[in-house]
Length: 334
Image (cartoon, rainbow, N blue to C red; front, side, top):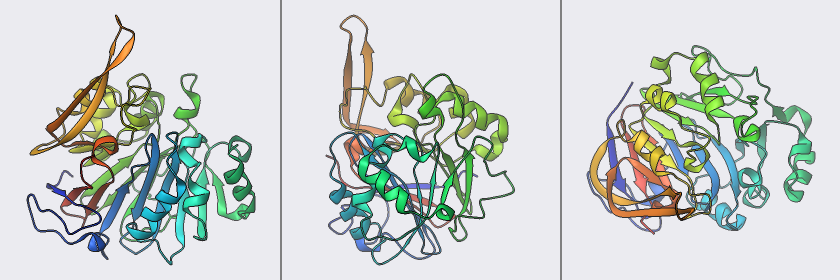
């Protein structure tokens, strides 16, 4: 069910600057009974923290190809993510690429992790520190998801505890000849009351097609979509996928003016018929390909008004829902 969205600006180190409604200071962003999702700016990579309504926490990916320091991610998780002094309910690595997991061991140093969910095999995780850490995790706390693993519409995941927020794994380990590692990404939906968010990892159109075949389009419609693979046009966010999800808001995790040209202009334009025009200007950048010059052309605006956001320009992004409304907090433009 589509619900009301309010866009708010929040400086994580200071009281909120209110645009459309009063909000709490940064240390009150994580509150009991709310579902809070942090899309953390790690440069060109992914790190998404979920604060569940029951007080438990789930980290989805923790990696970067931009040289982002793991200590900085750790600081965010402890200072703003609400995990200090707690065990992590689950660590989910959506696929075995270093920019999905190479910050995990530093960021989670001395943080107990109850369960780890991955795809592939342990041999696929070659980053030395993470590989060594993974061998120390008991076998009964590691789950390697296979291609037939998913949670049906009426049967949310019973293993990952997130209180009244229901978690559905939509796909994992999808086999495809095109971008096979990306296609294997774990894709999740979190449903909390009337609010839905889909977290895609680096899923490809092949992954999207599998999900579209498994679930009804009405059920897949979501309020917030994490744009797959940093906004890649070549692999992800196909037209049928966007038409089914119909997101009111979309978020991409990418490095500023990265060498891959992510996010691409056509991906952003594909989302704009569905995302809300919130009339609150924010920064946005995306690339198009100039075939004549054989290079990416970057388009930047500080007056972009669609509900499409990027960690490259907005920094850390926080989505919070009470199961009825949801808010998006922007951690200040870069």
